[in-house]
Image (tube, rainbow, N blue to C red; front, side, top):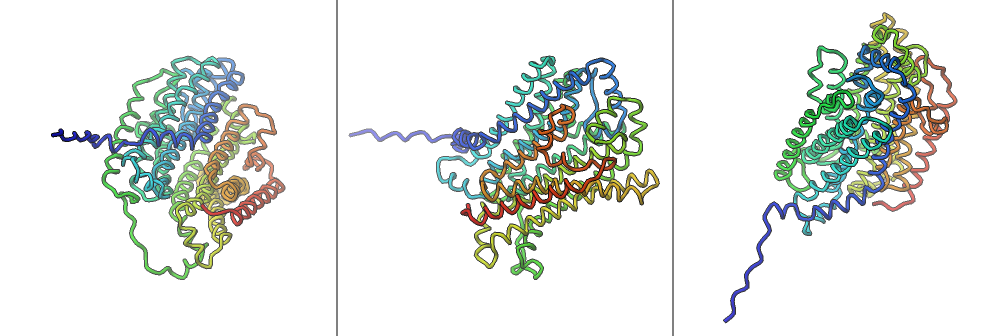
Amino acid sequence: MTAAATPAPRPAAADADLAGTRELTKIWLRRDRIMLPAWIYLLTATMAGTLYSFKSLYDTPGSRAGLVDGVNASAATRALAGPVLGSGSVAGLAAWKVGVTGGVLVAVMSVLLVVRHTRAEEESGRLELLGATVVGRRAPLTAGILVALAADAVLAVVVPVSSIVLGAPVAGSFAFGLSWAACGLVFTTAAAVAAQLTETSRSANGLALGLLGVAYGLRAIADAGPRFAWMTWLSPLGWSEQVRAFGGDRWWVLLLPLAAAAALGTGAYVLLGRRDHGAGVLSVGLGPAEAARSFRSTSALARRLQRGLLVSWAAGFLIYGFAVGSVADGLDAMVGTSRATRTVLAELGGSPGLVDSFLATDVGIMALLAAACAVQVVLRLRAEETGGRLELLLATRATRTRWALGHLAVAAAGSAALLALYGLSSGLAYGISTSDVGGEVPRQLGAALVQVPAVWTVAATAVLLFGFVPRAVPAAWGVLAAVLLLGQLGPVLKLPQWAMDLSPFSHVPKLPGGHYGSTPLLWLTLVAVALCAAGLVGLRRRDLG
């Protein structure tokens, strides 16, 4: 008589839900082996390059004190980049210069990583195949969060080490690196929540990046004046500022992003357990059985798909334009006699006039945001292809070229409309404050619209990638990040002209206040058209998928 075989112990439910996490993390780190080092290098170079240049630009206590006084006296400058907190050392000034911009970029990187490895994978159907294996229910979300946290952790080490090598204090360097990583931590978990709420990667990215826009707006309002200073504690970007790297190093502030990330992360896992695979918590209702006549074309379909995205961007451009125009009139009085602040604005804005330099600098930033919107519209092409919807569409009389042109028209017209809205709103607000609406509205509108060819050129690089190397389409965000860094740090770092010329925005007239020339705009438009045409040729010749 033989004893009955003892059954093997069954794994606990929690362990089963996390099965395969390690393997998925390794796979996704391998997929990001190019994108992640590029992000980390650009962010590290931003801080290190700024610190190196500021050591020579502001080499005396008097020059540093003048910059601190000028920045902290200007509500507009504080709204854009935050105040200088602390004594105003070289390292502190470098942290002020790149703190907000870098925090935003770290947040964007974290959002894109999490959504790419969670909602985008689920939307494409690949997670359904993985779910048929030993991969647990929570494994993809956990692996996506771990990849983003790994990138944030590397930044928290590499950025401080590079600063210490350049002579920055050790404690302040690590406080600054952790402030960036904390910002990434919060938006990593916010993106995890967004991936559970929505049904598409586009909606998840839009929701998470919309929260980032709200966080930036709250911080800007809080920094602009003491009346709303309390609002800085409502924004993760404000928390990063309040760490006060190189100006007191308030380590306890880092507990706030940790607590927020813990709450958001817990919420993401709770929502994951309450939804079906492929669905979002926020359900989308079915549309009518037949489309209206106005929707029976590929261009109409593109406009319908992109409508919500463009409306959200338009609201932000309109509100921000009014805000900038409202503070521009008092800029001269707020800066006072600070020669350092005037010099920095003149280098960025390309005009000896303080207000014109400020307005030109700001319209350049909004042009970069318009380019981000245009790239986001173009990337919808790839989402439609990988989601299998393009094949269904091509089963009708639609062609690849006609389908793509519909989305490209939305990208071109939408980005131009965003800049026009900003020019009109900022010109109207500034014109009202100076009693010259008739003069300022067309001047600001023209300054905004000259940026359009450069915006189209950046978007056209995404079209080229989509046509020939569709899997590398996310690299378009890297192109945009490189253009952003060249535009914001190139003049300050005194980069060679050939490096500055790599950015299409360096060829755009710096208006208002600068010299207008139509030749660069014509060439940029031709380059954008050529890149789009090449991308469409590649799309026609390659296989789908």
